[in-house]
Image (cartoon, rainbow, N blue to C red):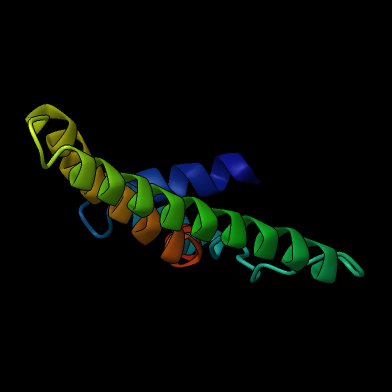
Length: 111
């Protein structure tokens, strides 16, 4: 049966009616795509672990910004490279916090 569907899809593609991909989806009816669903009883523990992870990222972000600010304050006097290291660290910390903030949305795009 699969051979017949493949042959029909190839024929439709070669004769110009449909592309091969569209023809296969048209003839096969498409693959099922159910929404994501947590296994029974696992939703609460997973949400707890994800909450701990978000809290950890928040603590690391605040610490990173404080460290960058401290480097900039200490390097203000006669240590220009130390201050520059602190200043270049700020965008990296903010990028990490931004990625953590949109992580669920990015992962949801691929599901």
